[in-house]
Length: 309
Image 1: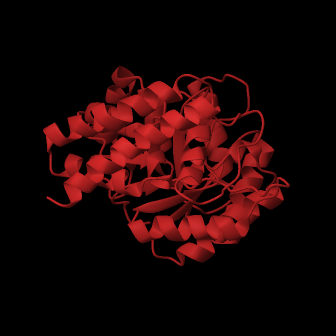
Image 2: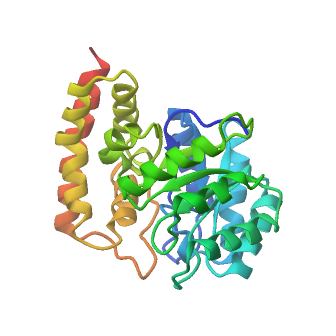
């Protein structure tokens, strides 16, 4: 697997009015995202409501992503939950032609790091796909077990959605020391919700890659911010944070699950009817939709200002 480069695209999963996966709208959503130039596509993951898909729907979503992407960028698919299902998802992703897996936490139970390593190893045995482990929720590693993960031949990365900078600093340093001189590719990812807000902190750890949910509905903003980060334009980064990302996070934090619901609503606001979210998530209220539209308008205006400089 070639290293990722650029903003990572986590598409939503569109649903019809009757509640079925809308593969036609998904294909259009993917085409629009690919036209903006992401560094990779992560299908049926958190933003794509992995938690709400059955196996047949999962196959539809991953298969659509592989077909539409056509090998232009890597396609990784979500997997996780109960171990037997996680292994089945891994096999289904391989059958659909995915390039790799993003391993979500196991279902419900809290487990020690050693148990999580065993869970990861069992999933790697279900397919030959490269795998990125997602640290968040009830899946929390320590530096020593992170090294065990990194030494597994198929594990090519660790995505952090926990936000414990002290822990992540120790994990990054310990893994890099352990792999020093090793030719095996291994990458770290900032996987926090609305990751742009925490980009400066993760960059301080040498973690450059991040997932951008905003890319789903406003790639202009996402890419303009990424360009500012790449060019180390701190003043412009601060303007995007103050004018768009910080207000979006404030709105996101008002209701659990809005990290997904607002993104899907944003796609609808930009003219593509991807439907609503599935229970237990809820769609934004009318007042929150109006606020999202205002925030998005401010972000787009700033991106346009930057583009014409």
